[in-house]
Picture 1 (cartoon, rainbow, N blue to C red):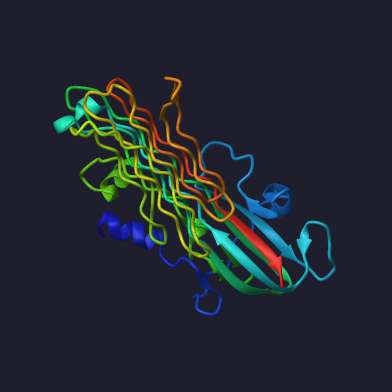
Picture 2: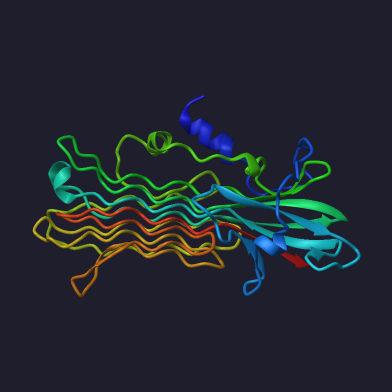
Length: 314
């Protein structure tokens, strides 16, 4: 199986509901925390990644549905579930002098995640929530006798809801709880051989923006902001800005694609005050900004925003 097919198999199935999803083996509950204790954002009224140690691909927790109305549980009933993966990471910037014909510049912004909406019937029992983390940002360019351009950002990890007793998929992507990020080598291979600093994206997401390139026309192109997603759709990351050959300023990274809830991260580069600014991380489910790239510096891309799960009673 080639790497492109591997990526598709890891992330396929976004948006399937319980009526069409195949059953899976029973799910282990060993050591998982209560979702309201570990992952509930009371200000926003949703479950997302909180207090992550290191850089996990996801966080998993248990949600109890009980007619007793105990603290830290939901009552049985019909709910509208909104499930979003993590947003794609922004791409790293490329030194303008490192590639042919003066090419180079800021990295593309990461794609915003598609938000799946489904009506679900939550009966009494325990459910496992898997919340996908935002994709890491791509590496900055590698200097040396054989230079490499900025690395692509990673796709965000998938999210889902599973009924523990049966292993049934309730909403989201199958096998999200078993998803593992590709290695750096696999991620770069899936992005293609051009090494053009593409923002992170994946099946069910729009493509991240490409890297910017310098132009010999003397025209300076501004970085494009990331798009905002319509409900149920993903948003493309912004293409990076480019600078003319005689302009030493940094090519700005593209902005990350937004979601209905969270705005995309801004791209890095050089500000109007002649100050280098770093690419900014995306907010909930949105793409991270691309790193800046100038004739003297190249910066890494920013991580995408973490995924989220919302449950609203009907």
